[in-house]
Length: 284
Image (cartoon, rainbow, N blue to C red):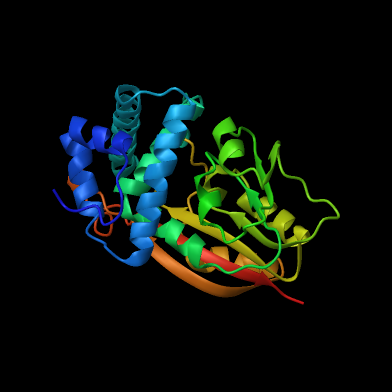
């Protein structure tokens, strides 16, 4: 098996031994032995084991959850390539995933899907000063890659208690974010905008919540037919224009293509699925 180039926890090792498909996905993903890739894989393997232990999730349950979520996504990709529609466009009453299943899928996918690992690497590279705001904190995994040793404010509609234990320096708010008189020097909205009916309303709220020169760190998703994605960012130019109209300037951009090699699909050729990692700064 391909070397891990970092430590591998007993929990993750058990998942790999139990599933040849997962092992193959990992082997393909682990060919990147850069320092940043090693750091991300090691931190995520630790987080996964801690999350599972804290929430009393067995290896068998975690693997079954991941396989079922992955099966569902493959089905959604197949429907998208046929219809050009996202799952919620096909069935607005589509049933979602349980939050634990969702968290497990996102955590494990960082270890086996290069595009998700690269997003974490880009978060690590983004320098900030002061305490940031994170909107859509999810399982909490991203907080470990934000360069904010004193923490900041983190919002989501549901926050697993494990995040509070691992990151006690952060202030967690289990509610929708609403702008206030508080001004931040950095706001992170990672893998969030595509989940919203009106992502530009949130971007406008972020503009109100940043001081001059403050950074808006965000991502878009194109042709990623996930069950809870509402918005497809088909044009980088349109997105950038609309964000700039809110008072931002583009600081950096990285296009991150998806690869689904074990599905028999090359995203570049078939779906053209990708994320874009953006850093904007507020004018003034």
